[in-house]
Image (cartoon, rainbow, N blue to C red; front, side, top):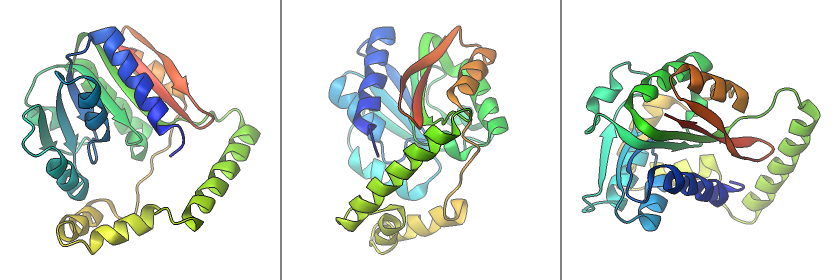
Length: 229
């Protein structure tokens, strides 16, 4: 994934700048815990709650952080209006997510932002790094997409696992086979929303009660949007 570490660096830079080096963090749609891993390496006194619905990715995350009392995991569906009641804390200094919420369409995503506006503490931040292409630049988008796909094809030819291959290995792993089967019962092959542009996210975060919102990092296809309570 291009620029992956750069977006994580900017995300954690903003956490430090706005809420300090000992934040209480909600790792939203946490997957295997990629954000939590980088968070704790940079801020050892941080604590993290990871929330996801994917049983296979949660199994990996729980194994990775087993015995670390700074980390808690919650199984919840972000489309369930009552999902926040399952969290161990009423508020968080930072809610962070990356390459995860694009599977939500705009209406449920706006509803989720409304909920996040209630659990991000005053002075706290929400950050979403995800696919946010600009629909007003179709030729730029097409050129970028063609280049990315060519690089992905070259990487696969060199032996890098793609989405389908990775899940094929998980389905045959003795530990992950059962949660992987459950995962595909929940999601199917893949779920994609309508990936609105960064401007939509900024406007919707302000409508959800964030005092400030803006893009703090971007590439031709992706952006990192920050909302400050």
